[in-house]
Length: 216
Ligand SMILES: [Zn+2]
Ligand SMILES: [Zn+2]
Image 1 (spheres, rainbow, N blue to C red):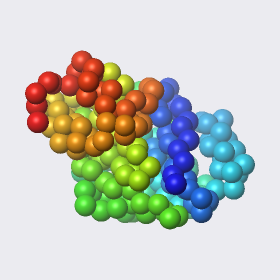
Image 2: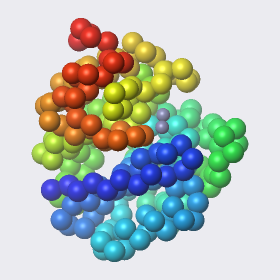
Image 3: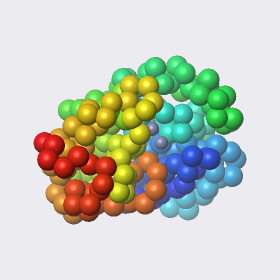
């Protein structure tokens, strides 16, 4: 069974998730630490629970999600798994960090390209990958079918959806991703977004004001 721990990091109030199971292996989803204090917070949880980090995964490559990749990768000697569709954002990361005045430890290249159809395995657990563009090219969702949750990055939020005014943003494509990849999951599926509180597929399907009714 996968357990999930949330951390809120950096000035963008980014939700970083640590996923672990009974084997003690864990993966770090968007571990975007921006300073030593945040890094220590992450390290404390890992050491207290005697976990072994196996991999860094990015839901997409916007600066608020990849900020800590290099620091965390070097600390635990980890590879990065991400969708290659977001390579452009990785290339621009130093500039983006500069623009927002964020401390940036440097680019970490993608070691393991992810895309729909592949699974992400750690410990005795397996996550399905969905391609969900619309907020940004290279956006993926991680679905834990047996455990009934999905990590969605900035695709879907509690009563909101991802912005589409950034580069490669596309409103129609985002709606399509939400309807075809997320809203087909069971209503009780817990949604862990990149910012803000968690929700469920059923709640968002019923009352999210930004989801176009009738699109399928
Ligand atoms: Zn984003
Ligand atoms: Zn974000």
